[in-house]
Length: 324
Ligand code: SF4
View 1 (cartoon, helix red, strand yellow):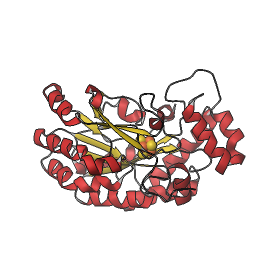
View 2 (cartoon, helix red, strand yellow; view 1 turned 45 degrees about the vertical axis):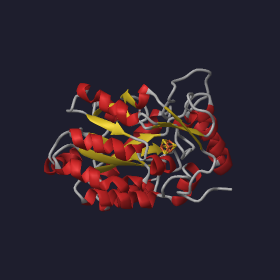
View 3 (cartoon, helix red, strand yellow; view 1 turned 60 degrees about the horizontal axis):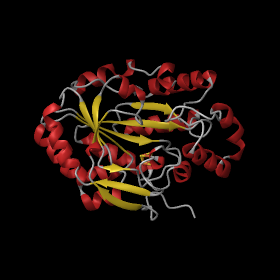
């Protein structure tokens, strides 16, 4: 049975352990624009794995967890504290884990980490699909009001509820994500959308893109960073993607096999669509819609006063290179 959007995933098994890897150097998963620009240097991850099990995601297939397992890193806060003397405070920490809502509501590791981040005035970047981030709005506001860079990006695939139910059934609904974005933006914190992944021939129509950009702009979003779906050339993430396509979009399977050819070996975190004509057309259409709503498609530089960010935002756009 298809779960209701936002309902708890009953299959998840939570285990606890201590690890020095709660605090790691920047790595994969985020749009490469953020990594290339060195917006953040370290990533604080209180949980390994994710309870949401989005069909296109790599995290549920992490080789260090068992099927349906989420590991809770109980020593996250002490690991964070011990690394603070080494931090370059011109760069943000990326804090993730709100998507493990059930665990976080109980353990409150993110909230405890945020208290440390506020205490030491560390620039902060959050990326999530969960409106649980609103629980900690008081701390985010305190950090932001003290003049430290704070940014919250919501990850969205589409505003189409049917697509969300199929591809990310356990996540907070896209509309609730936009509502949460607005509340955060309303207190003066920089917010944006990571439009990831754009699903070829499913969520990439002009109508869907226009709807998403227009609603994002209405709700205080300051940028939309697109990244097309990445699929591995073999393995579990590929099987999950093609499994959902065969079930819900069988007419697209052949086209996806062309865009994402099967191979024995390939990059660990997959490749984008192998069709430059498709990518160029997508880029052109995204550029047009981003101009229409004056929403840039790249991440703003940090730290920068809000007034300056708004003045320059329509000139900043992604390039075909950022999709490849
Ligand atoms: S919520 Fe994010 S990390 Fe979790 S499965 Fe979905 S895409 Fe992956």
